[in-house]
Amino acid sequence: MPSITLQLSGPRNPDLGQQAMVLINQLTADVLGKQPQLMATTVQYVADEDWFIAGQPLSATGGSAFHLVISITDETNTKQEKALFLAEVHAGLKRLMPDLHDVSYVHLVDARAAAYGYGGRTQEWRHQQAGV
Image (cartoon, rainbow, N blue to C red; front, side, top):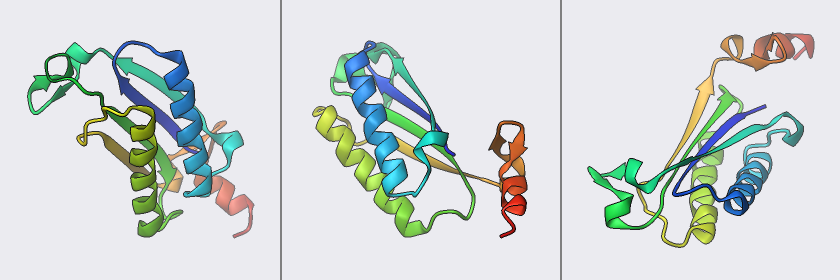
């Protein structure tokens, strides 16, 4: 049930946004084992003149970048799954954005089950209701 926010550098590009969302959601399901019907994804765009790497705007240096933040319930994925996810996301977005800067980040936020949820219920509550 991840909450997913993907920021892409450059002007709004609905085709790129759609392709990137599909890629991220597919990897989130395949690598992290999350349920697609519970994914909420937001794609945002940041102008190149407002995206800085090493103090220089992309409008001056060229290239593109992304910043991905996904909230997942703590202790539901292994370190290996997370490492594979980061590698696959970067490789996949590099295929979509060939001029991708290496300083593009993925942040998997391990949220405590008692402090995270949807539909007015915490993940801890759902865990307890499942009798696990």
